[in-house]
Amino acid sequence: MTPHPINITPKKLYYTHKQSNVLPTKQHCLRVKKLINMEAPFAIYIKGKDEKTRDNTDVDLEFRQESNFYYLTGVDEPGYQVVFDSTSERVYLVTPNVPENDIFWKGPSHNTAELLALYNVDEIVQEDSLPRLLHTLNPEITFVLNDQHQTHLSKIAPTLNINTQLLAPAINESRLIKFPWEIDLIRQVMHGSSQAHIALMQHFQPGMTEAHLAALFRWNCALYQIYNQAYLPIVASGPRAATLHYSKNNQRIPDDPHSLVLVDAGGEKGCYGSDITRTFPVRGVFSEESKTIYNIVLNMQQTVLSNLKPGVYWTDMQRLAIRVLCNELVKIGILVGNQDELIQRGVPSAFYYHGLGHSLGLDVHDVGGKDKKLTSQQEEDDPTITEFLLGRPLEKNMVLTVEPGLYFNDAMLNIWTQFPGYQDYFNLHMLAKYRSVGGVRIEDTIVITDDGYENLTLVPKEIHEIEALMNAQ
Image (cartoon, rainbow, N blue to C red; front, side, top):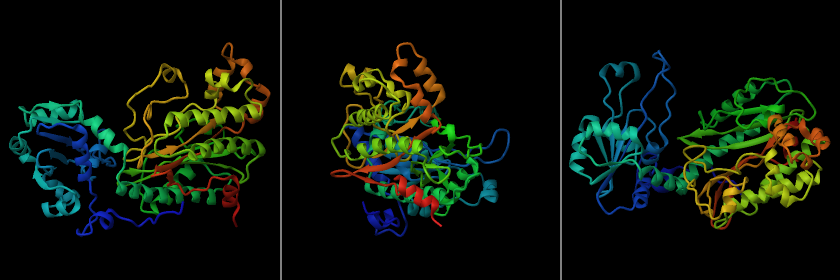
């Protein structure tokens, strides 16, 4: 699909009458109210994150707002609180009390007019006035995220009837389906992160270290005004590519004909993240063995992508990916036996032992879609099925990753090939032939559309494209 422009802002799309780029976060408050579905007057209360310092020092830790608070306010500053009143549908942003001495060190806080211009809220309330606000609203019930927020709020307003059970599920459900402006923000950060992945392939040289590539990724994200990472970059080379969450990034990249570099990294901008994985050859050209394994994973992903649209069940896509993997491993001789039996006994899990994907948004593994709704005992016993979107079809404006993989992890393979009754499923000679490849994962972030999907990932993934990038003069 033709790439969308990357300079779209929520201001231009939704708030043309305002003079600032205000994110329309009040839409989130109203959607959460609808999902709570209660006629009685209620309030929602969330406390944002406070500043923190490194242990036993006065050194500030990098601040990142709590995702649910940001979801309702768009505020990425410490010390704030929010109250939403269901009756008036007004959003009250509660400002922190800032000691006067702190102004000398960190500068003045925003005043009321500035806050109203920056954020999609209706009223600014000083922290000292929060008890009076809650008394005036007088909700029959106040929803908070957790016991910690309940304890904090009980000290401020001891007479409130506080519920810790309903708010988190409502926000989780609300965050699963993105508004168009959220997709625009994710599209922008995906563009910059994609360019950073492309730069790694273009500038890679044998002899580099994993740390060098991790730093180069962050640098190239910054060139696109993306200064934070959605998660610790994973730069896994050689056999380490078979370790799913390898983030030490402290080894020299091996210069071997079969060696691959697996880079799983994505920037974050305005608290919205990205998630991309690409695997490329150390020498700029795939060996025959690494090419074979890479194409298996690419086939898994492309088969799934070709089936994505509203109404499709994610569990069916997980099974489809496993079936493609099993068929290919039998075809090249690594696995031996009847494919239905191999799948029933979970044998492909020796090479692929994580889910097919996840939701993405304000967290890289975003909330929502994890309510277990098993439709049968068969699903409960199926090792290929994860809890994500169980018994629930895909819907328009879900943002998901599609990330199949194939790994030759020594610890995992030793368990499977030595387990009684399973040895006959593996051809150890053929397994040894491909084992040095290490691992391959290919991950794209996509958004479900009216009749299919849009791929937000712009990084080439065909073998000839990767080799061309790495060998361009």
